[in-house]
Length: 308
Image 1: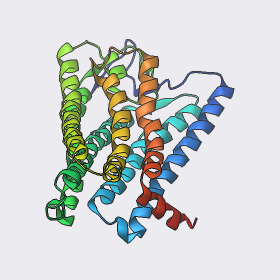
Image 2: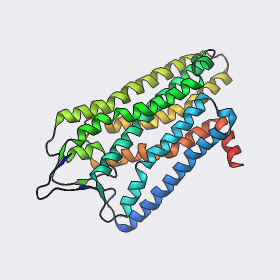
Image 3: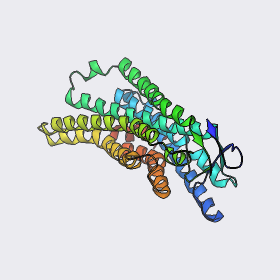
């Protein structure tokens, strides 16, 4: 990685985070700490409920438990560093630390894309192919799918991280963000390279668009099958198993497509922070609530686990 400055070689970036008076920074620290702890507790509760309740040892809930674990990893890739940054006077982050955060944050985001697509496919099989579902979605296949999601997610962003690590950075080392996001990083490069931005946009959008279309197609087939169910109770049950996942998909893809639907460096800093904060911090907090509120099996398992 080449890093230049007008006067000397610099040794890291400054994550500006949320510039505000000290009193407001303390409030932000308390707020994000509470959100982080609630996220850990909510997603951890779902993992424990699935683990301890034998009735939930099915592909649907195994995927949900892995998704909850992914959400814990996802929020942990940003929030602890953000909390330390809020209290820090220097707000420094090393180059290796910055690019490691960049890699893990986007790799976990890619893994979430794959999990959302597989969870939609699981619901398609369960509702549209109910007789063949047990023979298709076996425990072995479910395990292979879970491993495949993690491996593909972490392989996908190796190319962008290698490309960006070879770029030259000069001038200001201030990143007007709370994490190492490609937009602000590209803005600090010595020479603006539209080709690199295009490559990064393509690599970012390709899995997003393909998997989003796959999810839409899966649920279109599910909707067609559900509408053919003669009883209203059957239709409600089918919609209830899919409603939570569709809500989570809408929250995640809605914010991510707004963020990365165009060139990586075109968004204003304030917009970048708000949208990134929503899909990286708020949605992992909301997902356990969404799944537990709309799923009777999860609610019963949580009540049993918590002794309520």
